[in-house]
Length: 230
Ligand SMILES: [Zn+2]
Image (cartoon, rainbow, N blue to C red; front, side, top):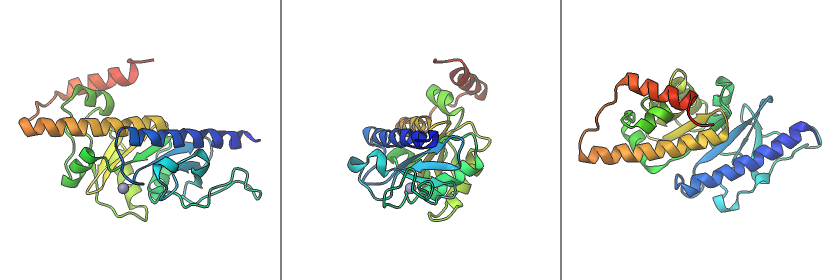
């Protein structure tokens, strides 16, 4: 077994396990939503298959594709093989992000209710919570309206997140995409994005949230990203 085959087996397990977090935090319904991970050091990624129920996901069903979103199963013998399933219909968007943001190791997409409600209005979530300062370093921005099926979603994600602290973008009339240095971080960003979308929405029902000073937001972000934790 080559190191690459071992790495793919491990990443398939990780990506499969992380999908359970999307259902655990109620970020997805039916077969919507997807997690992918880059295969470090190779122009490959691992992503959920299209149209499979979350209950039926197992590591072997995770699809390995190149960074154009085309399934690859290794050498002529099919070194690691692929299931007879198409990769997620959002594969082109994930692949575009990996091609254009080399620092990204994981991408997540959901239609989680509150974040998608903000996306529906095309409204960025203002940074009015200390945990938003910590996790997002500012507002969660809105990306352009883009149709599924080609590179427009990927282009919109990259154009919006490049130069932003936020690992989450609300694609207009669609829903959140999140990125991270690995797939687990991208899943965490998807969970936190929904959490702050819900809290700020509820705050709005009662009045206008108090803005936070940008200098304090920057200090929160710096401390959380560079000092806090292990
Ligand atoms: Zn979608």
